[in-house]
Image (cartoon, rainbow, N blue to C red; front, side):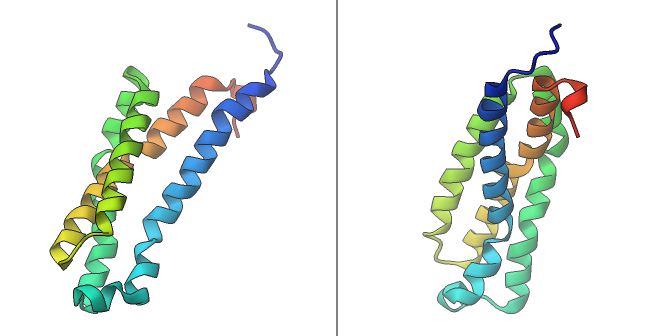
Length: 136
C-alpha cells in the first residue's frame, strides 16, 4: 500500500460527511427553536408535551445505532446514508404540516429513527476510507 495520501479523498469524503453531520446536529435541536417561535401556540402544546416532543426524538434515535453500525460494516454504508437522508427529508417536510401534538410526536420519533444510524455509518466509512495514521 502506498503512503501517498490522495487530496481529493478529503474533499470527496470529508466534505459531504461534515455537511451532513452539521445539519444532523442542527436538526436534533431545531424543535427547541420552533416551539417558542409559535409552534406551541399553533398546536396548543403544553410545556410538558414540548419536553416529550423534544425527547422522543432520541428514543427513536437509539433504534438504529447498533443496526446502523452493523449495516455499515457488512452492507452498503453509502446506500444506508442515502435512504436515511431521503427519509429524514420527507419527515422534516411533513413536520411542517402537523396539526396536532400527537402527529408531532410520531414524526419526531420517526425523524430520530431516520437519523439514528447516521453516526455509526459515518464513523465506519471514515475508518474504511482513511489509514490509521490519519484518524484522530
